[in-house]
Image 1 (cartoon, rainbow, N blue to C red):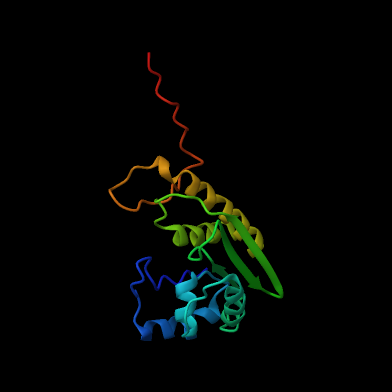
Image 2 (cartoon, rainbow, N blue to C red):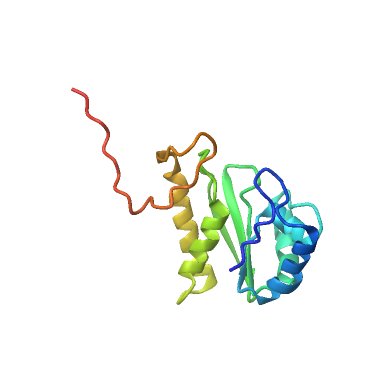
Length: 172
């Protein structure tokens, strides 16, 4: 599973053009699953990032031609009430759509998703692992505002299913 962390949420480039070429030409053909967000997809293809669901579909097909067995194109950068991710590989296509969860604590969503997929992949198909990982991430996003870490954008709540729910304080 390769999450090509190449573009920061701020838009800053994290890899030099030479490093992007190495990722595209050397690493992608060895991947079972590539998980780019929209800016990263644009960088890999040397074109503007997809700005619509229709553009995501054509970009997904182009990414598949770079050699990975599967591509999960993450659509979280698009506007709208839903977050739509597209999965394609081995002659199959899948759409994962979930309501956009309003939270300022979204730091680490892409890395958390790819890590969850990698952990869930043994013994499962890629579409099944992606579906379970998306459920986990949606729970981590929904519970993220329970965390009060730092002053800025915080992380998703990775341990949402393990930490006990706190009961509201009782006043007399």
